[in-house]
Image: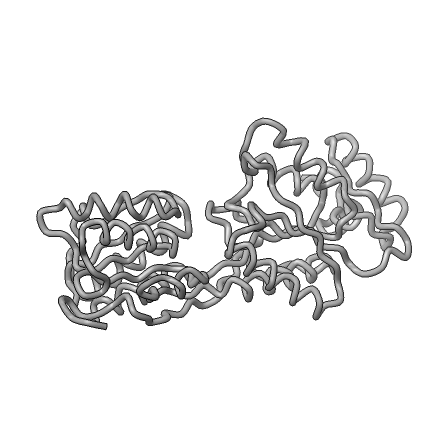
Length: 334
């Protein structure tokens, strides 16, 4: 709209909005008038001699294995690229909280960072629009909620991961296979459940309604759904839980009923966080390359800071099944 109002190309309008010098004075004046009339908020121009790019990583929490893997991937890629990274936490109420939402984002935008990485479930539509108005390059790292179509993000092949998990259980001989997804209607969870359904359909196996559970990506969510499934007239012999934390909850529910993993119920989870290896038995899981995803996001952001446009808004890295001790044939041993 800005380019159309000023009678210039979109790249030219973008140069003016981002403080670039390579624009004719008269063209700059026309674009600036349109920006002012529309209330567009422009970022402060970088200081001369400012030095290497400074990237801000905004995360939902700082003390989780997930955040640690992401931070490691960003730090390693930043070191290779010769840039600096600062880390900040989203408000305790989450980025979607109504109170102080605008102030929180405005404080981020006021900092003279070159670009931002968001390791959050997602932002609100208003927050996405505000970042766009400020002209700040940013990339989402594995957003749970589907971002607007123009927002660049880096994630994993969730659908294929769901296929791999279920094919592994089918290959062991299981036919009664349940799935426990995280938050319904959110892209990572629904994609993993869809992959499970696809693998079951390809094998000609039914997925009874009671064999699909939804909760949240938490240990309690997995425990609650597994308790419900154990009360079915014909409980599953195998379960695919869409996160490692939910998988630990599944183990709790099974242990509470005196059922052994994998001798009586096999389990595949998703993520491959450290607790999947530490569990007893160690969990067979679908590995998300979290550090690699974070590093890819940083490199993409640096290209955007340099003026490049991403070829596609969604970059997906491959998942991989890691077989450990929590899966075995029905009634068998690992």
